[in-house]
Image 1: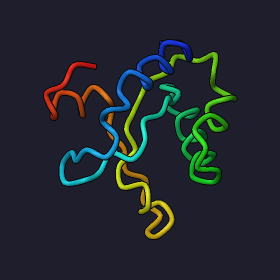
Image 2: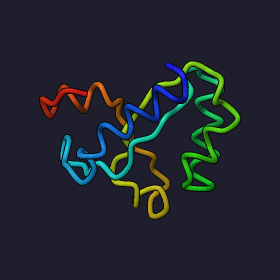
Image 3: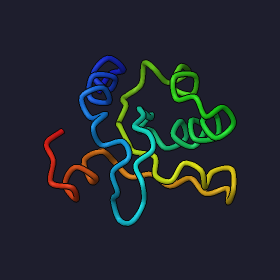
Length: 97
């Protein structure tokens, strides 16, 4: 999907923020590049900035997906980046995305 479609999907699913999935809290919903190398670089940028809009800029023209960031506080405290696809979360919570 392109960036505009990803942003619309993110906006449409803000109601998921704060909900629990697999015992973890959904803290953010962000777009990410699907290509593996770009995905890895994106995560590094995101973990440095905690700003998804900044992190996605270099990849805005690529094929994107949307995922939920879980227990965001663990990034700083434990160096753990927990995330799951929006599709997986929607299926688990039985909601339409």
